[in-house]
Length: 582
Image (cartoon, rainbow, N blue to C red; front, side, top):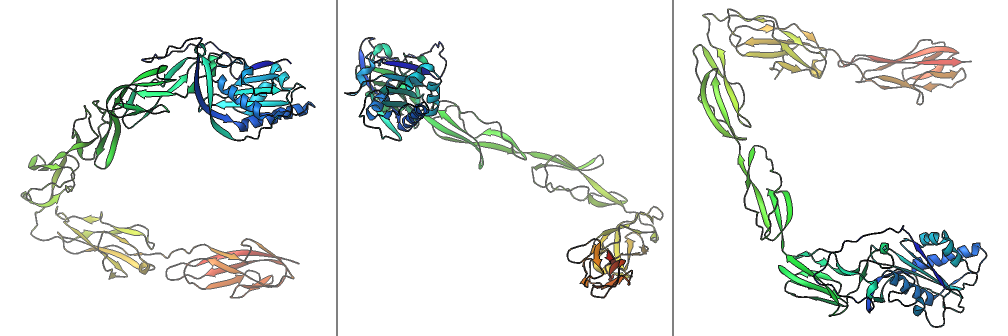
């Protein structure tokens, strides 16, 4: 019976050139010698079952008999899928024929091979769309099939499909995925082995994973690299670095050591690793961490950008970090800013004070000037945050032989409503003989009576002021008498909007002559004023004091409700139109 294998790639073949890092020692593999080693990966029986299900679905659609998913053929297919990860070919990596993998009593007829497809669905689609692969899957003489699906972490999937005309095979019942180690025999000509990754520096406390990899698949270079299980592993100096069976290299102390991974003590690959110590350098400003950096032994740390703090100047760091040999905490240093505060009167400087940021300046003794009284300083200086000039204030202190009487007028400005603030406008006061007013004092009155505590230039109107007359009197320290404003009455407040409703409608109402009586209600308004109801056309409808409406005849009438005013609120009304039809 014809035996054949058909290949399927998931990607387009291209010529690739590989740049390799030569290790310190590489085993000199003989091209014709067969080497034995293991590879470990995932055997995916779920995908194998899915491919068989899809295959039988395809065959059923063509009226062909089902094929049995054979345990023996699947075991063989899994082995071959793993072998193609080393040498992608229908020939085994050691150059032997495919038939050397078959179980006793089973012969094969046809087979398909593929790489790179990520699922049973995608590989079946690829095989179905390829005439050669499709032909093998739809032969009438096939009775059994085995499916192999093998992959390593982050690697491509390798697929193998084997058909046989054998009968009485044991059906496969395997499901799930299983991490499996497969034995591999390969000639040196089919191998290209390196230690990877190429990193040669290891930090204490941060182990580095090394591994043996067949980096070039001689069957097809696009198949990628495959990890090999080393049978031999050792370190030339375990006081510097150790290595375990999985190739995990752990730094012990600073220095260099040779790590060897291979098939045996005579067939191995070597990588020189340098172990260094790393430290954590933390740059801080008080409780704030500015930067955290990992630094190798003897190397400098990199400082962050200069920090900023209100009222201070950055003054560098509190320790050196150019040769780090231990974990370090480096703190920012600061100088508090200082400012110049100058007390002066025109061109005359009374005092110059140097003050730290946020502190208070100290004023000089009160200055003196003929004909004037010192009236304090023109600005505060209790929290200095910049250079400051503070000027003396003066009031004219000449007094006439007779104290003049205050004259002119004062007015009240602002809206005369409750909760509004009004002010005394003194721009109408008149000076006499050049005498300054001095200190102005105020007293607000309600209906001619002084309001307790109302002695500022402004006054917030209260509920007690509504409907009352408000005045303000002003006196001046350098004058006799007082000037009182004209009175202004505080207006009542407008009530909130008043609405009429029959419980469902608040607009125009319609009723028939036969309608039963109904009641209107009023909502809204303000205060506790009495509600009064009226009807504009009593022949159409009347309404009592409780809002009860009685229909009298057809036509139109307007119902009005009025909420009486109070001492605080003015009156408010609302209307609703009622149309009555016969």
